[in-house]
Image 1: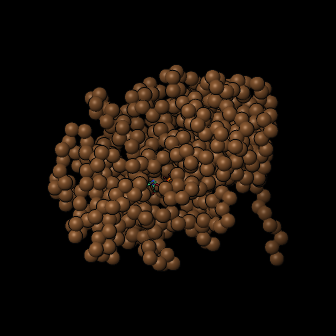
Image 2 (image 1 turned 135 degrees about the vertical axis):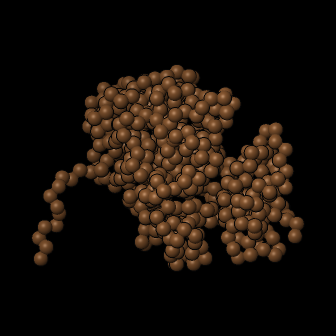
Image 3 (image 1 turned 90 degrees about the vertical axis):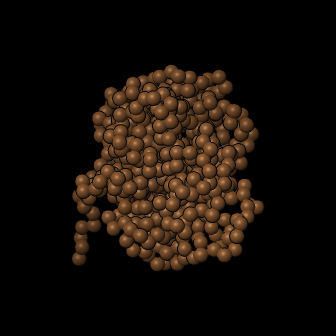
Length: 536
Ligand code: ADP
């Protein structure tokens, strides 16, 4: 008979306040630098962030906020936003990071759905606040991060407290943050993170196979703090004691100067951010900043980007994830065969999405029969599923689970898993093109197309075809000054993809529609070309 039910180690709830206590105690002097929208620079440190978070927790209680209730932030990256990540969780509240680029109806929906009680925002978003105020009936208090012109300023608000506060202690599975997906179909959906899931995700994010942080890292995250819990960086960074450099504006000239002035070693952003940085450096005739590591995620990193960063001596950490996965699922980095690979092979591998970090499990299943698991053979593509302690179980206020009984969550992505665990994403389930019963990856076609020097952006969608069901059509935005033709693009594609993948038409457009997170919106593109007819 088993008599002992528990081991004999200490029990300590995995809660966010433990992270900021650790950072203040062990890395208290490590700087947090903020470059504000008006060009000013302020400096605090982890001890200062903790002090302000204690005051903020007090100030929220003084407003009558109860544990479990939501506080919204609509803000770019800066130290006061960082304070909120700890202050709200520290009093048991739930921080709702709102993406200011959402459309009005979506903004109304998510703030009402989350029943946000307090809204803290950057002065730059005052026009959005003015426009939405009447529609946000749940919001009782407005506070502004960087100005006291229209409402109470954040500094005055927390400044009225003495900071003599004990963190709220609840269950480690209590919620601490909520993010909404950008909802390319239907209403956005809320993903509520827990203290425990957030901590496990952040711990896993620090490992050498992921972000590889240490106390000597100086990190400038370009990924906005309102996007998918900003890839866990604000928590992982505190655990490691990194120096953070934040910029409230995403101008490449500003980012570049900050990187040089503050000795930035690590940065993270979506591909368009890196692209803008390349263009800035080319225009100025200057080198890329001497970064040790660049994390790229949110969309596929194109080959030329990976190659250029690697030639710059920068380790490229190509990561895949989604709001529903906290978000980190896989991260790329040197694999066991690395030393035997040529530079070209290393680039090819880095263009894939990396390997699952400890804690999550991946599998692919047949696109037509989701019950059949596919081999990890490096060639069979299927619907990508994931499970683990920081993967969604159920959307906020939903009636049914989003994951199946075994925990598998269907990502909506299509990919190939290689024998060494490397994930190669090939498409989204709804974008993959079915031609004569065979699948064509719209993403691979786009990536090949943007490698042409005359192409600024490309999007590929399947159009109805009487014989093949669907055939790919490539929409291209030319680079300024380029007069590249459709024939030249087809010639460029020929050596890069299978012959039967070649698009049936290349159409030149002035712009390609994007979602609120800056990704190509195929849905809007399809709507725009609803009457498009392929010549048979
Ligand atoms: P949203 O769904 O709101 O646009 P998410 O950040 O949750 O925002 O988007 C997740 C999706 O982004 C993934 O399902 C995947 O399709 C795409 N994605 C993320 N990272 C990568 C990557 N490294 N390569 C290709 N696609 C990616």
